[in-house]
Image (tube, rainbow, N blue to C red; front, side, top):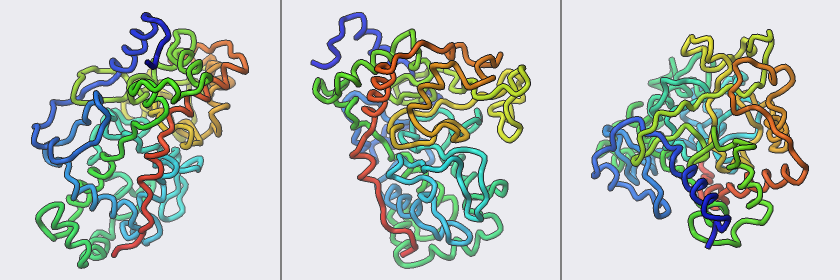
Length: 375
């Protein structure tokens, strides 16, 4: 049997894997959930789904086609998948994103792995907790421009009034008419379907396969869940992020943290280009706070941090061992969990091995779509 590390450790680990998933709203009606087979491993909770956008296979199929279609951008140069690439866990290997006009954005593209479980969306916005709401930003935002739909709405809708899309919309909504409400709901359904629970860690921890993880990865797991390294405080639960919600739990957890990346004035200031949650909350204590992302498939989602300033997992672990970066170590607003720790070379390799055990190769391969134009 897996996890043979002693009763006390098992109980502790089990608690970490279960407790850190919050619940924001009531469970949707059962019939909404039954319209779609999540194909989740036994014991994993289903994500919450809005009552006005129940899951269905037809909506997911339509949403996937739209997600990979460059016709959704005003100049037909990029799709959602241009930044959220399946082989990189629906992130991209760039420091920060670039929009359809070539405009550089200020933040790193986040992975969409298990985004259906996120209680908060984007890097630093406590008010964005609906995928349908969040999708409007890349579609219609004018600063920065991403897909650049604003001002080109009719032209873009016209691109999807063809025989193939008419059938897809009819299957998904019992109506062939194309509009942005349906596009958003279909995209949200596809994004919600991107669940990943087939990593080596999952096989070891939940399917009792002792051979699924290497000895190094097992040692790294013990370090990860230890009170010395404290990684689990921000990256806890079955989704390895504090920002989680699902149908079984109602926990109000703070998903935003200041990790000591910067401290420009010895009072905790971050660069004016991006100061985190404070931009939304206007609360001084929220300077430099960003959402802790999931660590699932983190091996392939480099670079890391909200500004893409750390390139490798090796650098990430060194950063946390130091308790921040340069002056950020003494940032007075830094999370108390970022105290730093002594790190031996073998321990670093073990931690990296554990993080690599969270990679779901099946998920990365199964979501590739080679189509990029309207049919």
